[in-house]
Length: 499
Ligand SMILES: [Zn+2]
Ligand SMILES: [Zn+2]
Image 1: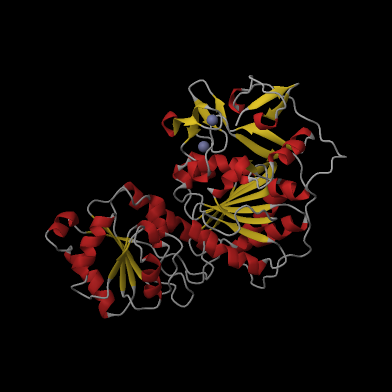
Image 2: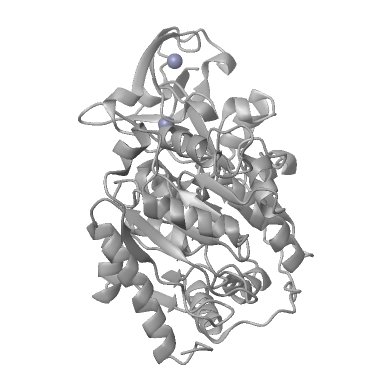
């Protein structure tokens, strides 16, 4: 689409009365004047509530263009450039991409020229040089919810301290990192702060890189805050296009929001792909209001963040003990020689086989982590000779959910897996081993998460965690140290049941 500029105002070519030859794509139009809000204008509440807190493409707005234009001319919404020219090329305003190889050109029917578009966020609809992004300049008064929290659980000592810090950060529009060990119960730590925010009419978003976390969190939060409208946003969710005072979203879906939230919580901030993906960081920055709080939740902060915390440059609160009060199982290291060479001969290192056999004989369920899919397949083939119920699971496995369920039901004694199960999957009373812990894929954070699968339930707070390796790495040592440090802090703060 192209616009003509009339006295500093944008008029879509399709609505222009004259056949004006000066029409241009929005990205090539420089100064336009901002239009003051006309309070007497009979605005469409449907349109404005659809657009509130969002930044949308015209085709995402199910309203006629002349109605949208009338709201623009009366100051209720604005057209922004979808892309902006930079010194070196382009920047996509929706996703922040500036990398040249993520832009492409195509003959565009809308602006009747060769047009540039962003490939990086193409899965959310095309943003090109002639694409306006529509944003609201109006917000409805926000409803306040009286005592919205209906949760009868109690917080542990460590959780309570973190919950107070979260509430404070929310009240002061501050930034805070909550560093909670695996099994500390980090979601509940948010409850008092979120309740307070909703009482004050604030809008709350919990964003996470992973769809399965959104799906798992949404029902828990609906139960905790039954009177508050809550929507869950992920690719394929029914709630897409809606807005509510309480939103649980994947970081991708946040790209459609614009200055929408007073409280932004990012869960599993270290998890792929957020930590690798500047786009998602950009999305978070854009979706927050200019004055808002930002809470990060993680069990394994990035080493750079750990340093900042140590030096007092980043505000953080730690929960070093699990909810049940038993210490974290500490990994042991076992050298297993050149295991890849052994695999080629269709064998596993002797100590690894012995570890697996003992689990089968004593009927103790276990995860065995391996670095990559091809190794996974080889290991499964070998282990099926020991017990044919043993299975393997990886990210692209179509039977992934079924196999995890079968493991939970006890029908699979040992599950060989790649790092996909390093987070989120909680099964009581299991042992865990890593084969090839020296591989680059096993970062400090991945190893801490993997060790965190063990001893999660109060009935079975112990379990074996063993890193089989062909040469100890710095990451392995750092992971073990991190776990030991947390146990020490928990013990010093009197948070452990057994010393
Ligand atoms: Zn983009
Ligand atoms: Zn175009």
